[in-house]
Structure formats: structure tokens, C-alpha cells
Length: 130
Image 1 (tube, one colour):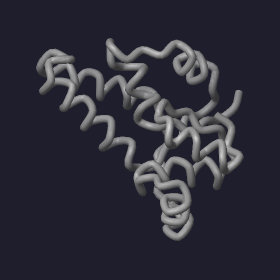
Image 2 (cartoon, one colour):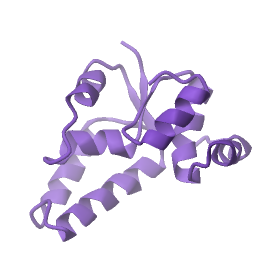
Image 3 (cartoon, helix red, strand yellow):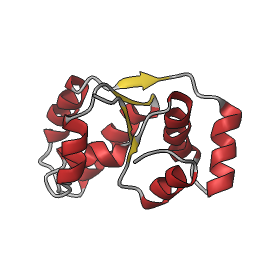
């Protein structure tokens, strides 16, 4: 089993009823450990709160889904190389947030699973498997 770097878009497709993506679910289900930058914790909770506000989730459902997310056991990384992250952001016109995921995948030589087209394109340009 291969360890993977997963971003918030990939994880959101697992938990939001109107965003399911079977190929992502299959890749994650067959993976070893899941890894992400520390930012994932906040990004996912923001996605859940916004989904509640927009009526995509019932009030309070985000809390239950957040607990389910914690059960996934995603390993949150805090060891980003600031220069590498900013270099990726500049080179590929990415947000620093997205560059954190790509830098982690590059640092550990892991595939990156994302539904974000710009991030996927940047990963491919950097030789990161998707």
C-alpha cells in the first residue's frame, strides 16, 4: 500500500453527499497512510461550516462529519520548508495553501490526490504522481 498526500478537495469528496468522486474514494481506500499539511484540519472544518450555511448539510451535521474525519487518521505535517512552498506558489501561480500539499508530496515522494485542477497540473509539472 502506498502512502498518499490528500488535499481538502479530495477529502471533501468523501464526506459531502453532493460531491462524491468514486475514483478518489477508491484510491484513498486502497492507500496506506494519508498525509496532509496541518492546514487540512482547518480547511475541512471550514468546508463543513460553509456547507451548513448554504444548506448542503443539516445544522450540526458538520460536527459529526468532523469527528468522522478525525477517524481517518490523516497524519498532519508541520515541517514545511517555507522557501520551497513559496517557490512552488510562484512557479505555478498557486496559493501558498495549495503549495503546502505539493511541497509535502515532493518532500516525501508521495502521490498527491486532489480534485483541484490547478494543483493537479502543478503536481504533474513537478513530476508528482496523482
